[in-house]
Length: 134
Image (tube, rainbow, N blue to C red; front, side, top):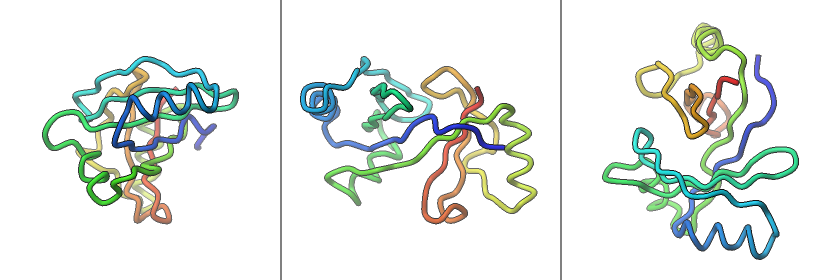
C-alpha cells in the first residue's frame, strides 16, 4: 500500500537559520518558504537525491508546530511522509485495520498541492505518519 518515502519533516524554531544551515553547511538545494495556512505552518523543502526534507515553522495562532516546539525548543523530527496511489483507499484500509486518522478523516491539500492525511503516532510506534497521494 505505501510507496516511497516522500519526505522527513523537521520542526525548527528559526526557519531561515535552518534553511541557511542546509544550504551553506550541507550544500543542499533549498526551496523558498511557503505559507500553508490550512496546516498552520510555513515550510521550506530541501531537495535531496533520494527524498526531501521539509522544514516546518509555526504559522498563526494555534499552529500544531508551536506546541511541538514548546516541548522541543531546539526542534526535531516531526513526521515522516509516505506516498500512496489512492489516499481514500489507503485511509479506508488503515481504519479497517484499527489505525486512527487525525482530524476529520478527510484529506486536505498539502504543501505539494496533493491530498494528505495524518495517522496517529500511537498507532505507528510513536511516529506521526503523513500519507500523500501521488
